[in-house]
Length: 81
View 1 (cartoon, rainbow, N blue to C red):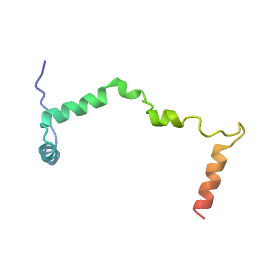
View 2 (cartoon, rainbow, N blue to C red; view 1 turned 90 degrees about the vertical axis):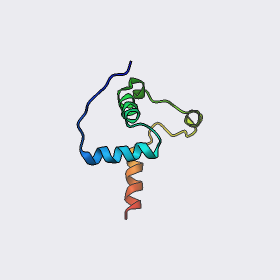
View 3 (cartoon, rainbow, N blue to C red; view 1 turned 45 degrees about the vertical axis):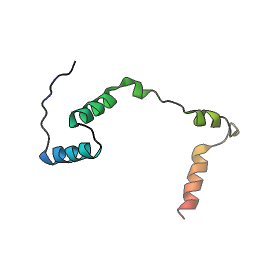
């Protein structure tokens, strides 16, 4: 079921949004609906691990006492000398 919504926006924002919608061949209503759907979709909180990332997991093996912070700090110090 579709429902009408009235909102108040700055004129410049509306003009730019209309231009964007026209260029992308989408109605302004559909654009707003898509945006609201994306920000309220609770599934977005879950990170999806892509097959590529999955295949790279565990490729590098480091010792348990490896200090990531120190190594990164040393790297940045060297980089910005």
